[in-house]
Image (cartoon, rainbow, N blue to C red; front, side):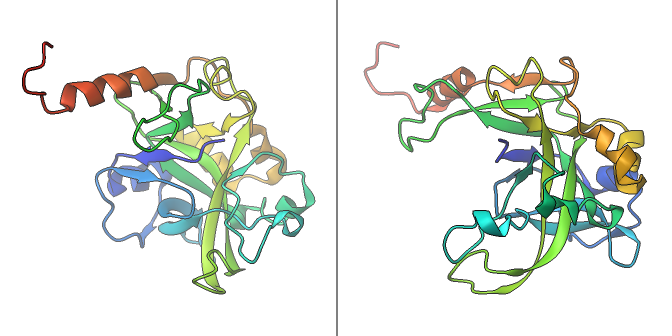
Length: 236
């Protein structure tokens, strides 16, 4: 399950690719790591019919029967749109595309942990070493509820993205799923405008050569060692 991705691109590139006519994001940082429950840019069909670039919170409303406690932390990845809860969101008015230049999956190797934090290190995937812009096929909705108990109930605009079976590159690292990736303007247009009977065909496994691994846990360890200040008297 993808719960971390990066955007390193310009708003203009996103607007041109998606033909978004309105931009209400403000200033997009040059590079952003996005985690669940954070705000991030998506291109959506706005309530007035305009295609716009907007900041939404990552995590769709969870099916009520699966919410635990007094807050809904959100569902980031949606695998089964046929499930009754998700059917209300598959129309064009709830579809969006999520700009991304790379995304992460935790290493399945138990030893690939950061020694300071204990957090599992990641494999990072992108279209190529240059990490060009692609999009995840997403859904969005306005929602009133409790995302964090300390915030209490409030109005939100939230999103999540579709997943599907992993390809041969992803499967050894995450055997259950990979994001639904849109790599052409035609695919983006189809997702944002086509009837669900057509758009749902985009929920398919990406060809094995669509992505490459651009960073491995071993690389992260090497970089950490190289960038650490030298130890006085070290033999290395």
